[in-house]
Image (cartoon, rainbow, N blue to C red; front, side):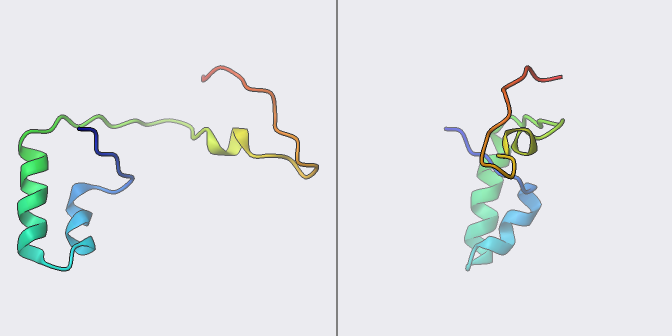
Length: 62
């Protein structure tokens, strides 16, 4: 299973109605999970259309 989020797992607790269930779920994820942190420039600004609706040519990541 792959779970992605733009928030730290410490912030996940606030998204659950029941804190006990939230803590249980987060503990299970963190206990057996591998964290992959991706850093770098976002692709979104590069792929955003210009004022005329044209998309820029795709380019390789830096």
